[in-house]
Image 1 (cartoon, rainbow over the protein chains, first blue to last red):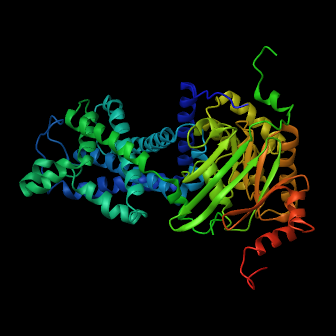
Image 2 (image 1 turned 180 degrees about the horizontal axis):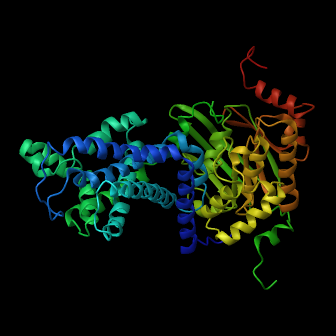
Image 3 (image 1 turned 90 degrees about the horizontal axis):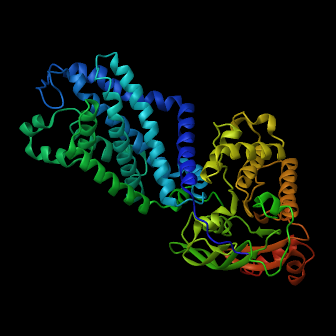
Length: 277
Length: 268
């Protein structure tokens, strides 16, 4: 009676992946507030912060830029990465803790390997961040942030990689550090330090002039490399060091996140519900 | 039969075979949350084409057991097999044969009925075309065809449960687990769901494990497992369990069995 194991075909893996991404996209379209707030955040930085700051901070010609650029143009890639940082942290947190527990149950009773299911989930989260980033780029275009048209295409692989890195980092952090179970904690201890100690808002040579130590911190920050990878890709170039760092971090964070993921943690937080007494 | 028989065809002629591999076998399973022991040496089987009621109060360990069978929790000790496939060693083969209805609702409320079903089908690697056909068929069977395109949010509690059962059947499992599926439903919706699930047992030969704390959901021909404070107090055909407890019905049998476990003066 016991049937021989038949494993899973490549087609089944593919169907599963597209199904998970499709559902995440549908859900995202239904959550307009989430979309709006994901867009408002970087736009506030762009319209208000950058406008006020452009007089303070002169930017010299640094690669990949070939001319003097406005401060707005400089921080655009940093804001794109910021969108992905917030999105990655938010979606990973809801995967590990209770908010999306019902969906995680449905997901995890799929017969496909658990690691693969989590990978699909992270990729789906990245896909959602891509929608947000491109919507931001569209609005930014009217604000005179006009990278070459081909840049919109060449930045795509960079965005997929950085989205995966930040999503898996979020999942690793929320699985591994018990104290970071709410978004406020993640904001204070992860998002703000990563964002400010990076090349998102100021070129690193300026940081080096001010504080060499902070410069080293920024250089070691994977978020800096996500920003630089996106910045160069947006102008059709590859920053090889950043690519190597982001790719390595993605692999390490993802393996760590899959190993550390424990669905009982999200369930335990539900308290007595579910008959656990 | 030279052509490969679809699973649906095989299911129409269930042949109860006493030597068959059990649909579900729980073998000496124990589980603890830190120092608190939730399950102690739990063993029982669910046969194909049978309705097994898992009877226990809230906190008896039913949900822990379900989380172990569905691989949400790792197994600490003991063994769980689904048609002979060990859930720890070959989870893929085991989960393929398993359909689950969890106690908390797990539908996407903002998605339509069909979208919910298609998502589940994708998780099982079922192609879009095949999934659409199966979804339409199952929605017809639960009488929700006209609602196929509406949001799940607009359904009643009973309709949502029926949809969850349809979803659990989409990949044609041979074992169905339901964790207190009638909680919070009105009398009519409860009766509908119970008769629907019993029909699956008799007509399609599915093995069902039905967790409940409601005595009136159990019938004379059912298999019964009484779980109390993490231990199995009795198991077997309902009539035998009742007789061995020296009781008239399930209700009093349960009181006698569990009363023996509580301290004098503490009993029901």
